[in-house]
Image (cartoon, rainbow, N blue to C red; front, side, top):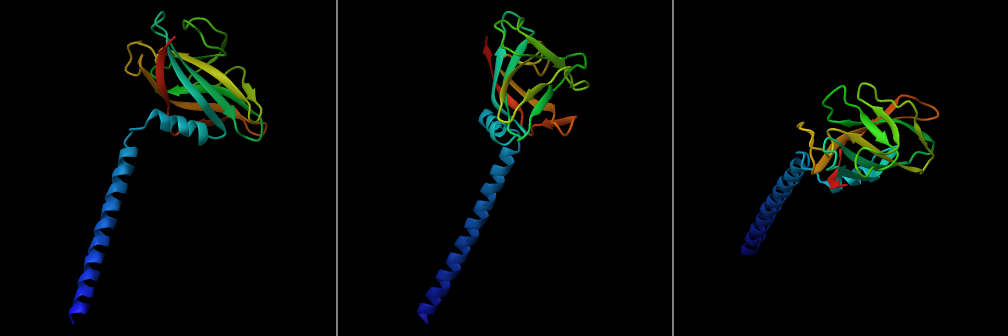
Length: 197
């Protein structure tokens, strides 16, 4: 009789312990879920997303530059790759947040040492995202773009401007041999530090 009572007590104890452990795991899982979805994203998470999950164009590298000589200007360097099986023509790059309809994001083919020089590629805005000429990338081909705007890596005086860091959502407008007018907006922003140039 006493051994069956002991077995029943042990079974009840084990059941209660299992229920407590399951509840604890659920609480920990919910806490992790809400902390990750609350906007506390790290630069590593953003870089990992753009380098491994974004399709059909990946951003393999991103770097911000702050120009002390021309403080109302900044630059983001992006290294992009076509991971599709067909050629892709990039027709425009647009950054958000966007504060002024008159502000165009100027794109250059090379980095500038002071924010004023460089080979100009084209400009785009959310209302007019397309460049006059596109950049065609073959499958697995990489290309670097240098985007300049008063609100990135600068002290332009707007709420979104910062000389320390950049954090912008990126929309890539592109076309393939079969389709035109395509666009891809990343679900995570591009982000990083603004290095003095």
